[in-house]
Length: 316
Image (tube, rainbow, N blue to C red; front, side, top):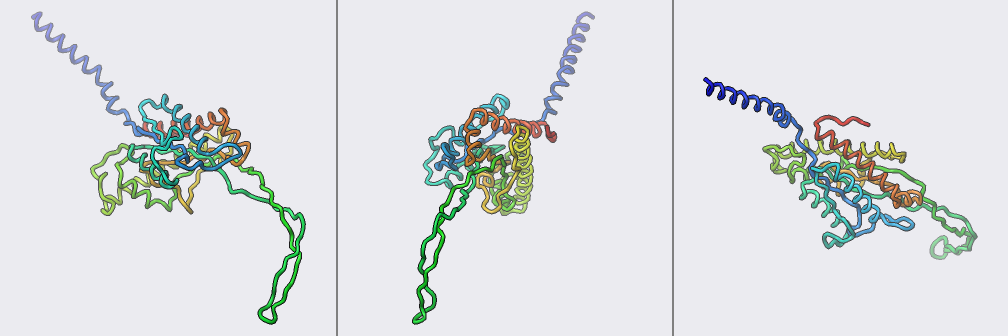
C-alpha cells in the first residue's frame, strides 16, 4: 500500500513538473521569430573616390566615422543581430578601378552576407552657384554678310567677374530605390534567398517562370514598403532633434545602385550638406556625429521592434 502511494505521488509530481513547464514551452512556441538577423552598414564612398568635398573635409571620411559610430551603438542593443560594415577603414577590400565597380561590390557583399537590412550613410552637396559682376567693357570684332557683302563691325561687350555663392541649403534626406528600378530590384531579389527569414518551397524559382516572377514581385513590394517605413522613421528622428528634414525621396532619373541591387530593404541616408560651412562643422563635430547616429539608431530600433514583434511600430 505504501509502495503504491509512493509511486502515485511520484507520478503526480512528474505531471506537476510537466504542467509547470507547459506555459514556458507555449510562450517559446508563440514567441515571434527574429526577422532582422544581419544589418549591413555602408560608409559611402572611399572605394575608391572621396565623394563630395567641403572646405576642409571629405565625404568618405565623415561617412566612415558616422557608420562606425552607428554600428557601435547598435551592437549592444541588438546582441542577437550581426552588424557588418562594407568598410572599416580606408583600406580597400578589393582593387577597384572606379566607384561603379566599388558599388557593385558593396551590393554583392550585402547579398552574400544574407543581409536583412542595408543602410548606406552619405553626406550631401549641391552644384556650385555663381553670381556675375560687370567690371568693365572691351571692344569685340564681329562680321556680317558673306562674300563681297561681308562687313567688319566692332561692338562693346561687358567683362564679367564671377563670384562663388555660399551654399546655404541644409538638412537631411533619406532615399529609397526608385519605383522605375523595380525590375532590377526584382531580378536581384529573385536570384537570392528570401532575406526576411520566411522560407518557402519556391524561393529558388527561376526568374523566367511565372511562379518566380510572382514571388519576386511580392518580395519587391514588401521590401519597398519596409524601406519606406524605415526611411520615414529616420527622417522623423532627425526632425525630433531639430534638424531640417527634406523628407524621403527617390532618384528616378539615375537611380542608386546599392539600393536597387540589394536583395533586402535598403535606405541611403544623406546626413547633411558638406558644402554648407555650418553643416560641415556640425558633421565633423562629436556632437553632430552623435546626434546623427542616435537618430538613425532610434529609427532602426523602431523598425526592428516592429518586425520582430509582428506588430506595426507606432510613431513615437
